[in-house]
Length: 309
Ligand SMILES: [Zn+2]
Image (cartoon, rainbow, N blue to C red; front, side, top):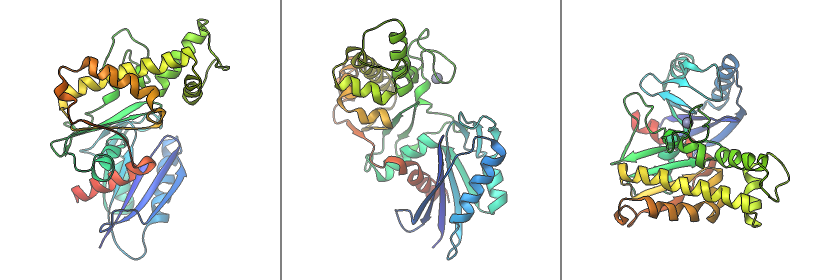
């Protein structure tokens, strides 16, 4: 049987997994720090692939998950927020020339969605919304048992729907996007603005991390609680919008902010119930936290490659 190599190119680390096509779990996982300069970034990624190349079997393909907008037809990176020089960058073509095997490139959050669908919290479901709520807000959609990608692959930028046109600045440069309200950065920016305006809080830093804000909220700090209530409220609005379009049977949350439990999920559920068109959208809807952790993207790209060989 053949081997498949998968990559998850993250902002901090690039991870690489070697899979045997007949087995579900990776044979090995390796990592390097992600280089942000494009020339050395591709060399580093190539070295990572080389040192994980199997000696005892042939490689059927390499599948890479990368952040940002990916053209899945041409397997190129249109725009990657963490590697500024990767604009219209032909990642797939370069790796294909270097290694002589089929290469697929797709969006990292979408690949995590595929991982959760096939092997995680979404097993057995055909209609899934996956959201990763961390520094940003990304995700993926499985509808009717298929991965929704759009014409070239830039569909399901789930964090960049507009919730309020004069709302807070988003990481993408626009205003009032879902991500600007409900991501870790959204929570952080809201708290920083309130501290600057003189709001009382037990937070000592004028620029606290999301983790520090979560700890303050658990200790009963009014500002920190308000920040999570607001993020959860808008999370409910955003997800209600998606329920109306996709009517999923399962909604999965990954990412660091999703680890804050009731702080985010209590206001989220209340807001969701308030904003859905009818309770039918919530009847039998599974709402779950992601199960695969950091490996969701590596596993998802493996499943995606197997589907496309
Ligand atoms: Zn945005």
